[in-house]
Length: 119
Image 1 (cartoon, rainbow, N blue to C red):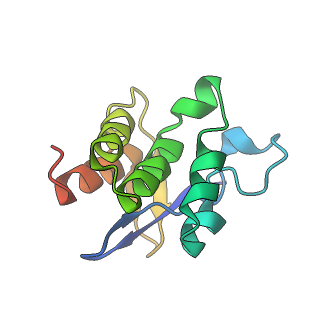
Image 2 (tube, rainbow, N blue to C red; image 1 turned 180 degrees about the vertical axis):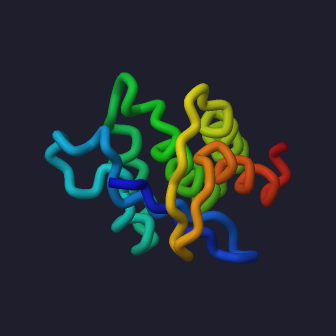
């Protein structure tokens, strides 16, 4: 399954991650807090996104979503750091964007950084 992200014009980047090959065995049907982000429930989204450890905690898709949560809650520096970590992933992979286009996960993170002056 391919990870899916959405970019919303001038309003900023919102990562809408629905599924990942690495999450198939996990019990959560929403490991990237898509539902909470879409509802604007930043507390629930942050709790979900920070509840993972090990490799899952450093998944670039999770970091992009966490950056969105941080930015939406006024923590710009933390958002930029999350996006920098996602952009620096040693093994970037392709993701399908909400509009159907395809981009590299590191490019999605770099787009967020560029939009918010974090490059």
